[in-house]
Image (cartoon, rainbow, N blue to C red; front, side, top):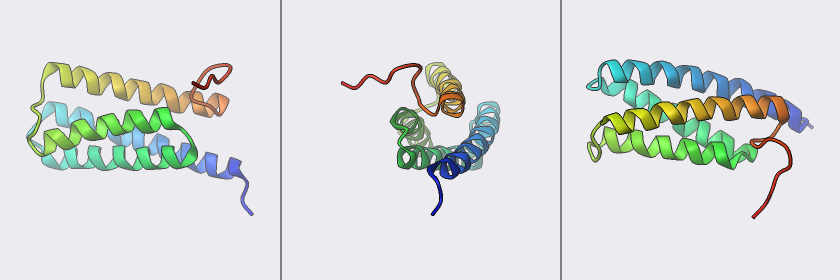
Length: 118
């Protein structure tokens, strides 16, 4: 039977890959918002990272991915236009995702210190 640590290593490897591709696709999309292909790829990688994060028990990462996924979907379906506020939100979310993945890698958790439940 495989240890949970093995799954965590695989998750982190996959998460870093998704973040790298996501960062690249967002940069390309912001340079050319009519490029539907990079928007589709950003949506796909966000969706994949969301699902993997939730399965691994990282709800903050999953929720942040869900928010990004929704933004990409709405832009893709033309239900939302790309504005400076959306761009800033996407950039902040990507930075937060990167920080969460780094925190998970260092501590095994999405939070620093003691986990507080509501």
